[in-house]
Image 1 (cartoon, rainbow, N blue to C red):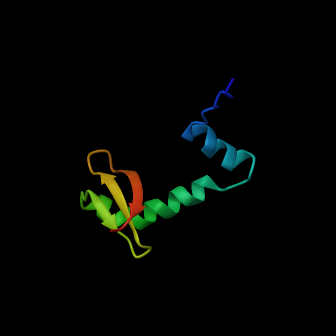
Image 2: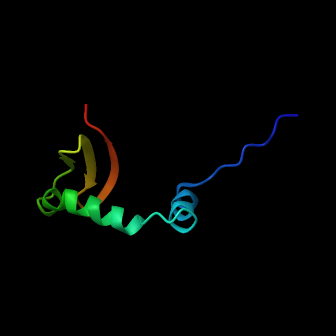
Length: 71
């Protein structure tokens, strides 16, 4: 009989990184916010950052939806 696979949610993974591994998640959140600040203030839907990534924004909620490599 095959083993059941346990699903680890994104929320659980972030909390594990933060609490078990000691990763400062809030520092990363601040860094991302600073990277997209100008785009967010202008109502952009994305920011092509110098780090080589595209930060996809929701201008209505002034939030970062995802981050992906620039093509």
